[in-house]
Image (cartoon, rainbow, N blue to C red):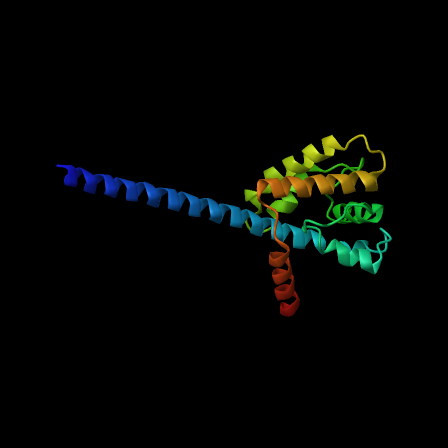
Length: 178
């Protein structure tokens, strides 16, 4: 009797382990899918950087630094970076006249990327919370820089921030394709 019960117990334990493994694997695919969406949005948004370099008075060195936005050691110290993000956001019509996020346009922009609908609501919500947190800052460039920093930290906490390796690999592939 004990042997028969042991066999049933082992079978049930295996089913539970397989179920946990499949759920975990499914969650990893979702997280990786979200990271891929964030990578695509980042690269798409970054296309406006060259356009905004002069307007935001971004030096070549600062422009190069900008490509490392998702690195842990990226510094949010230079007002010009905030001005560049403001210009890039304006380029894609993502800001209102008061230089706050235009929720509908931002949502549509994110959804314009493959599987963007997966993250659009969350990203708009994260940006909005960051804007509320830094709303007292009157200088638009500084405020937008602080919002960008807050957004980055929020994305990292949510597990949706792309790695630099992923971004660089994609950037190289896109460059070679052109």
